[in-house]
Amino acid sequence: MKRVLITGGTSGMGLSATKLFLEKGWKVIVVDINKEKGNKLIKELKEKGFNEVYFCKCDVSKDEDVKALFNYTMDILGGIDSIINNAGIWTGGMLHETKEDAWDKIFDVDVKSIYLTSKYFIPYMIENGGGSIVNTASVSGMYGDYDMAAYNAAKGAVVNLVKAMALDYGKYNIRVNNVCPSACKTPMFLANPKEVINEFNNKNPLKRICTPLEVAKAMYFLASDESSSCNGINLEITGGLNIHTGQPVQ
Ligand SMILES: NC(=O)c1ccc[n+]([C@@H]2O[C@H](COP(=O)([O-])OP(=O)(O)OC[C@H]3O[C@@H](n4cnc5c(N)ncnc54)[C@H](O)[C@@H]3O)[C@@H](O)[C@H]2O)c1
Image 1 (cartoon, rainbow, N blue to C red):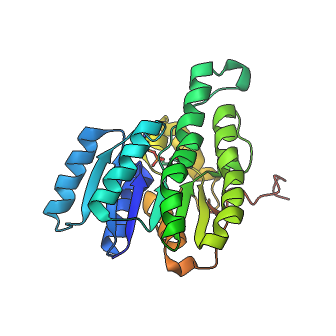
Image 2: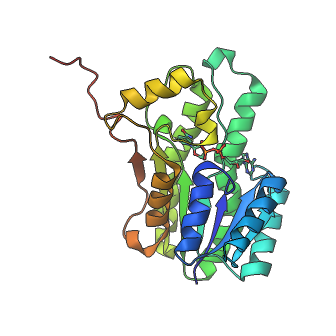
């Protein structure tokens, strides 16, 4: 049985990924800062008959927490095959309006977390024949948005980091890829007012935003051997939102 850890695994895309990897027969460590949600989820999943699922409370932006996560993973699973670096937060606003602590926090949670899981888990993967890593970036890391400077910058860092990681770790049989969703029906996005959600649905060529399961399927593809030659890609999951020239209909 393959082993995966999924950060932000109790909500939204991470929750869908947790369920999908379990259905595919993987052992899963769900990682989240929210202990209550984590414990509740494990209870529900065990009641549904999934036994190989574990929860580790961890703030992925904190070195000591990620170190403890590594030790927990080795104790419980004896190793790891795949990491889904999915935990993330969002902040809005133009750059000059962004508070310094909000800027620092988004870089800590959305970017530094990938450095920290790499720091602790990649040496294990190098010594044990490889693995796969999937980061949740965003289409907002590939292009700009209005009023989202810090988020654009943080996800932009992830969009380029994947290339450096893919180049450095390919020789160790560690593949590193990103999923880049646009707006997705998760608690993070559904916190927006109804009119905003409707506008996102209408602007999309598919006339709807993507679902967490659609993103989870892409995570699974990139984490598993199904994508054995994909390395360093930013897989856009947008329904075609971002392919338009911007020109009006003639
Ligand atoms: N929802 C969208 O429209 C959208 C679009 C593109 C990319 N994303 C990205 O997808 C990822 C998942 O987002 P989601 O929409 O499923 O969000 P969500 O808010 O539903 O879930 C995020 C999870 O991460 C956890 N988390 C937050 N900070 C953490 C920390 N410091 N340590 C550990 N866990 C932490 C939260 O408790 C939560 O369970 C994020 O990286 C987000 O930036 C979201």
